[in-house]
Length: 231
Image 1 (cartoon, rainbow, N blue to C red):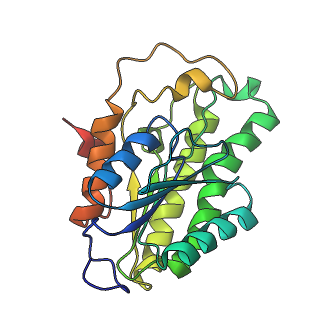
Image 2: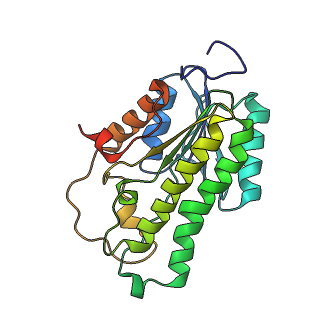
C-alpha cells in the first residue's frame, strides 16, 4: 500500500470485509487475503470460532440495511479505511418452482440479493479510491436450471445488479467483480433452506476458487465468468 487514501491492488496492508467469512468459501477467501497481508474483518450472523490479530469478526444480519451501515461504519472507524469487500453470503433451495413456498423465495432473495444490495450501498461511498467489491453469483447466474429456478433467479439478480452498479462504481474509482464459479464443494447444498440436493458431480476445491478470486482482486480483473475457473 503506497498511500492511506488509495488502494493500488497490493493486498498487503489492505483492509478487507468478507461477508459470509465463516462459510465454506468465505473461510479460504479470508485465509488467502490474510496470507497476502490484509487485515480482514469477517461478518456473519453467527459468531466466529477463531479470531487473530489479522482476522476479526463482527456478528450482523446484512439483510438489514441498518446492520450493513453499522458494520461498514464500524470497520472504517476502527481501521481508518476499507479497501476490499467480498460478499460470500448465500443460501440455496431445491425443488420445482410450483412446490417452492413463498417463504423460501423470500429467504433466497433477502439473503442472496437484498443483503448484497445493502452491503454495496453502505460500502461504496466509504471504499478507498481503487477499492474492490466482489460478489459471488455463481455459474447458475449464467444458465438457470430446473430444480434451482428460484435460487438461480436470485443469483441472476445479483449478476444483473453487479453489471449496473459496476458502471456507477467506476465514477467513484471502485471496481466491481462478479464471480461465477462452477459448483464448488462448500457444503452449502447440504444446508439448503428447502428441498433436497440432487446428486451433483464432484465440485471445485474451495481453496482453488478462493485463490482465483483473490488473484482477480490483485490483478485488476473486472469479471470472473465460469470459464475463468478452469483448472
